[in-house]
Amino acid sequence: MNTTANQELEVNIWVEKAVGRIRLNRPKALNALNFGMAEIIYSALKEWRDDDNIKAVLIDSEGERAFCAGGDVAEVYRARDTDISKANAFFTTEYNLNLTIAEYPKPYIAIMDGIVMGGGIGLSGHGSHRIVTERTMLAMPECAIGLIPDVGATWLLHNAPGELGKWMGMTGARLNGADAIYAGFADTFVKSDKLEILIENIINGENIEYEIERVSEPLPTSELASLQSEINEAFSKNTALECLGHLKQIVELDNSVAKDWAQNCVKAIEHGAPFATIATFEAQLIASNFASAKDALIIEYRYVSNAIKGTDFFEGVRAMLIDKDKNPKWNPTSLEQVSIDDVKACFASLGDKELIFEK
Ligand code: QUE
Image 1 (cartoon, rainbow, N blue to C red):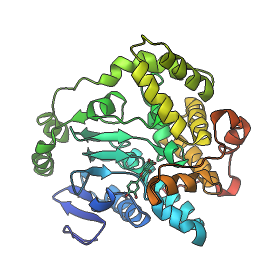
Image 2 (tube, rainbow, N blue to C red):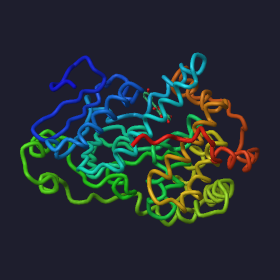
Image 3 (tube, rainbow, N blue to C red):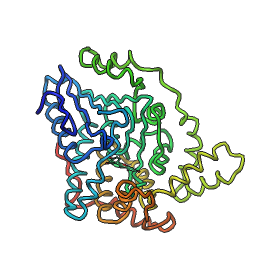
């Protein structure tokens, strides 16, 4: 293991006093998490877990734009024609990493500065100390690439207030730092110009809670909180299609205060893959029986294992990240055409192909 920051690596791992440091270092790719990075972070976390000299872990990232924009799904896309087992291996490692963070026995501090999407939430949202800034933009936009929110997010979405989780997952809505705290994806708001001193104080101080507390801002007002009753009303329907129908009704009521919000929801839902949107709704129903993030990872792995055998995921990655035409051709093409039995089948046990937890 290297002990000093190294410019060349896509993730830097080092130790400062009793703090294990992880810094994502792929700023041009918005620090998207690839297989190699996931393996490096995972092995460092396992090593530090059993090292009495390490009292806490802190993860942050290079550059101002993004903490981490997601898993490097372009890498999975490229593996399609060569070796699909590489995709399974990537998700297995990433999800084991997510669970390791969720179960970490030491403080795990995540600096969620800038874009935090998908795989970036997996690296931060399960931590014990989650810090957002005025630059935080957090979302689970997987339906736009024909996937469901994964990396254990099904658990985080399930624990969000009311029906917020269904709304976030089905629309890929973008949350600011205040909203992220409201939704339960983060704990503390710190201005980005105080991060450097905060990290220094955590390394040199005695008490992490105190060091965070003394640079934090009062809990900012979340605009999202004022939409909670609309969200609950629209997303408590029996099916995803009924949710969409309700949102369209709001749009048609000329004098509704929620009209713009509902219009944006309709647009987002109709942009995403219909099959994945219904699966995201279904995953939230399944989550009512969950006890932990581990349960979420098991069903998410079932879903992605099926998704990489289908076409929507690759079409979504092509349209959003490879060709960037933003014009995916989904199959099925509308919520009405999705078979709920087909969706449920994607969450059925994989038998001897279930997600393996290493421990
Ligand atoms: C939906 C997504 C992702 C996305 C865009 C979407 C996603 C993801 C990335 C991404 C961003 C920058 C990169 C990269 C991937 O974008 O999951 O490799 O450099 O990882 O609309 O789900």
